[in-house]
Amino acid sequence: MANETARKIGPVILLGPPGAGKGTQAKKIAEHYGIPQISTGDLLREHVGRGTALGLEVKAIMARGELVPDELLFGVVANRLKQADCERGLILDGFPRTAGQAGWLDAFLEREFFEKSERCTPVVIRLDVDYTQLLLRLTGRRSCPTCGRIYNVHFQPPRVDELCDLDGSKLVQRNDDGEEVIRGRLTAYEAQTKPVAGYYQAQSRLVPVNADRSVEEVTGQIFGVIDSHASGGASAG
Ligand code: AMP
Image (cartoon, rainbow, N blue to C red; front, top):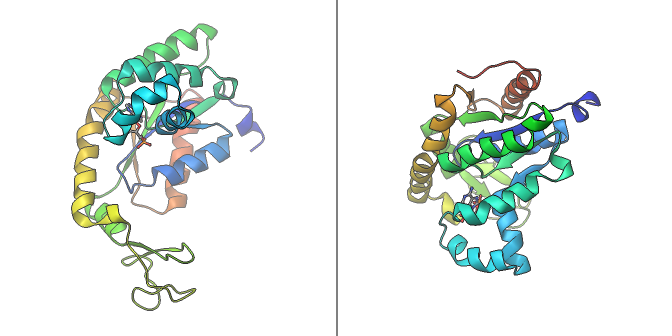
């Protein structure tokens, strides 16, 4: 672990549909390699919260769930990536969301980092999950309103139907975990992310990882991809 926090990792981009485990895996990468996780959604929400000029401009756009225009977003991303904690590497969360943003990121990294002769091409990992599996993961999710424990009626059911093992409360389902809403979220994801995956795939830089397996197995695979990339190996297909 000690050498993991001295080594150059470079930017890591995780692509994958809702329910693929991106959040979980991003946290594991951040902890293991000691690099920050940078979410453009969080950066923008911070501006909204602080009431900055940018925050005022993007508030309504974000409330409608639309993409914030590039000319407003790029400055925020550039400022964050230039900070000292990103020098060894970083995980991007929610960026790039379009092929245009992916192209901008490449140009930015080349301008800012290649000049210092650092290895900074992003490693792009796509978490692939079987569609049916994804639906079961999302539609089966239930939580206890009292203690917060998470269950899955298909994979990790409570001992008594719909009741929490720990305190007997009736389990609840998140509003956006209904099957219709989930199908909509998955379709939107496909439409939005395909061009980004396509951008990296066209340059043989997209590394697919089978995320149908256990969290630990997927983490192991991801670390393998990052280690190989950081040491100069090419593993994209
Ligand atoms: P998120 O937290 O990633 O779901 O992002 C919340 C909101 O922030 C999105 O609905 C967009 O309005 C905005 N946003 C975040 N990332 C981007 C991006 N890469 N491009 C454009 N808008 C973004």
